[in-house]
Amino acid sequence: MGLNTSDSVYSPSREKGVMRGGSRHSVIKRVRVALINIGSFKLKILLVLCIVFALLLIAAPTGSLMGWRYHHSLHSKSPNYRLRYTVLINTWRRNSLLKQAVAHYASCSSIDAIHVVWSEDDLPSATLQSHLRKAVYSKSSSNYKPEFRFDLNEDDNLNNRFKPIEGLRNDAIFSVDDDVLIPCRTLEFAFSVWQSAPESMVGFVPRMHWVDAKKSGAMHYNYGGWWSVWWMGTYSMVLSKAAFFHKKYLDMYTYQMPASVQEYVSRERNCEDIAMSFLVANATGAPPIWVKGKVFEIGSSGISSLKGHSQRRNKCLNDFVTLYGYMPLVPSNVKAVNAQYEWFW
Image 1: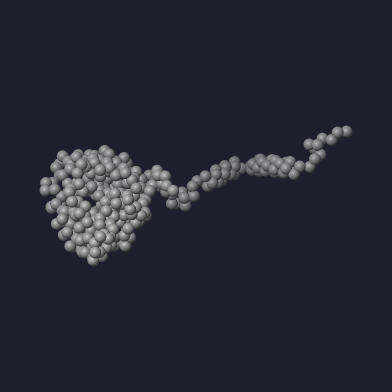
Image 2: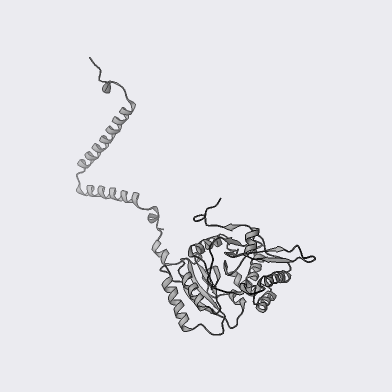
């Protein structure tokens, strides 16, 4: 007589399956018996309510049960000013460029306010003010609309761009010329870099200095423009024509920096950006941070296009060293790159 192998051969897995199935049927049977034995309709209702409550406990987020649930809608309507910055635009008789700059920066997402440094003899016209306010309102991509205002000055002085501003809600200042446009995505990345090093200047336009070996006697320095940075691979300044810095440096520039430096800038009508680089380097003992990104210069001319500009910058550099009593600028070869959009090795 043949053997039925499926019944005679021992299988541990089969035995476990049978046990699991038996156990499951046993539990179901016990629940049915319990429900049948409950004679009171009220007890049945109470049992159902207990089961429902248990399911709610399992499904509900822990935070809501503990009373500290995160309210995203409230957060989005109440801006965190630490996560925003103020754009400070320096302008001079170039209203068409100013309109482009204000409209562009109003479209960037993390901007809390836009201030225009106005140093012209005539006040900004009502037409210009109305146009810019409408541009800020219409170009803003979020429900939160940036504040906009003119910072008026009685005289034409390059030091005006670094005057303290009352009522600032942000620590971060993005200083920019009216003819310089930085793409919003690049600007947001630079802001994140500044947040990681808020004592530093973080910008897009690097410059450098080096010792002039041809000069004998006292230490003499040369000022290097973009091509010098490109060739040498180092820098010691980022120009305030497109740079982030902490708002406290506005107070330090006005009230703590040697008055002789402000007088020099006012007299020479140049080098306020070098003066700010000296100030921050003197305060921190650290180099600035250069951010890689596209810089669109929409103006056709400026101080840098004038004849003898390099010689004047050399003179500023060395005169400031004399006024400070030493060279505070610190060289660096570090460049911040957004790894989301750039290949790096």
